Image (cartoon, rainbow, N blue to C red; front, side):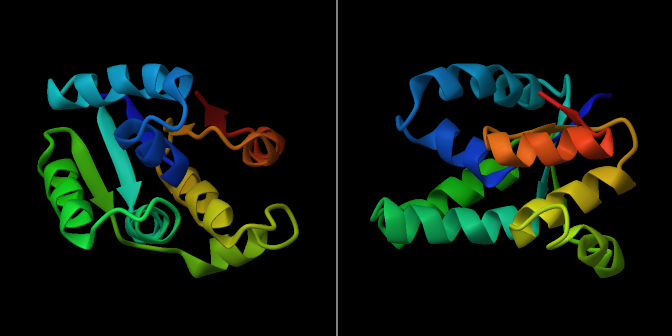
Length: 136
């Protein structure tokens, strides 16, 4: 089954209307995961960053963010990833990725062979291409 590693911006675009074009791209992935046609891999760091963005940037009530996380985690086809190979992360940060979270997601993708990273961050995508990692 195909595994998609999602970046924070993917989750934010799915639950907000900040960019409808991005939402149109990711909605089918969430629907496919709900039907167990693919797996959405979400690192715990993405959840932490999502909470921060929804709280501090969008001013979303914490209770609402909590409900969003409950719904997301309960979605069939979602796999939470909690392990981190910090040696791999540090080999990528800050030399290739200036954003620590990007290095963490890239290192995660290196451990999940055949996975595809889903992000809308063009700078991150450029770094992923240098590593030969697949992006959507």
